[in-house]
Length: 258
Image 1: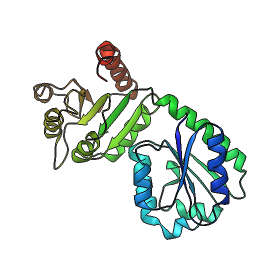
Image 2 (image 1 turned 135 degrees about the vertical axis):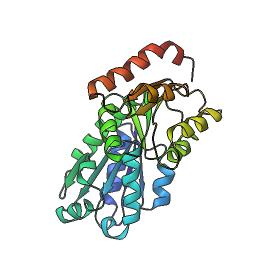
Image 3 (image 1 turned 60 degrees about the horizontal axis):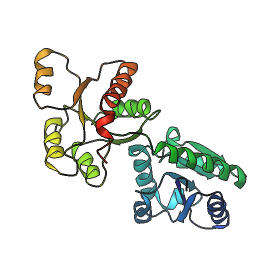
């Protein structure tokens, strides 16, 4: 079975029900839910793609939309939307348009929507075979840039603080953690200590991200015995090459980790 599509709809449900049926007939897993935080949360772990029917949701459920936005950003999950032009423009005041993978303006062809979701679901299933990287950095601009670079090849989960990362790691086991060395409240070394102290995460490789390249700073980082470190100032190509090189170097060991 291909990836799971979560259809979010409130009000008239004929089109949403038809879409779910078409997706299932094509071999996908699909479910329709209401725009409630608790319902979105219940499907969060299994959801691969979100399809939002705008309509009244834009005006009656802003908290649920903010929650959905945060999930799609942090877990790099595609969000597609359908609605009238005014509804979509108002929606983009809550969820920025650059976070929407595709919009369908009413009147929209249900077959076109189903085809797009079907293709995404299959791509999502293929992506599950890729390496999963967790990013931990309080610099949102750097986080977004790294997430964009890495998402071309890896599954990426972005977290904005050490404690958010620790919470995520309680129920997930990624292949690599890229951890900012300098963060407020709970810094990189403290997060690394917590990661190493938990049986579920103790053996997950951790590479520090640091903005300092002087010898003393590098020696301080290495003294904590991470699996490596990367300078934030490196060009995109060098960062990607370093991560790819890390996985290539450790691929035989990683076969036996799961």
